[in-house]
Image (cartoon, rainbow, N blue to C red; front, side, top):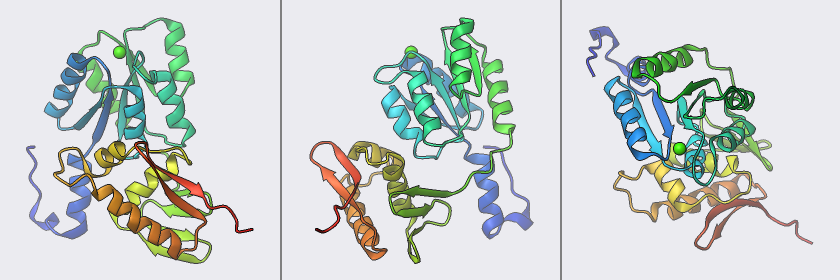
Length: 251
Ligand code: CA
């Protein structure tokens, strides 16, 4: 990226903030048609965005729920979960990430359905790259809704900004990866999250980290949940993944 920092900004937090803003606008493309997905991805990367692809609705939803995307480009006809179902689930989880729906289905009813379910914009295929980029700029310009960084599930509260995990007056700090893992589990509200989804979302498929790192982090998190005396436990489900469950009260 052609970007030079003025000398006086090359220190500390200012630089970090600036880099985040300029370099790290992350867009998720949920699209099952590989050629289409790659074309959009290449276009976005060429224009300075970071772009990931999810090839089905379920994987797409898992990615969006990490909360690490600034915008989502969402197709409608998708395997596993269709675009409307993904959108509904995203909004149900309280995420206000802007969603641009992209689809060959250009009937008015489809557009209305998409917008009613919480899409921010609806673009019919085929579209020009100029039009797509203009839509993205418009959506990204909108002021982000002031949303609380406090995520609550069961008896715990996670501050996703600071990483503070608390229950009542007991609290403990989580590091970035612990926070991301716990946030994913909390957003699923007791439903399992697969080890693969956790690994790819928190570490990244190309990270070079060993896949057993997920189990190691579960062990760190179990200790921290116990430390704040939460009744939540992280259950391992063989060949399925992990989920949060409430410990039965001792009888
Ligand atoms: Ca499709």
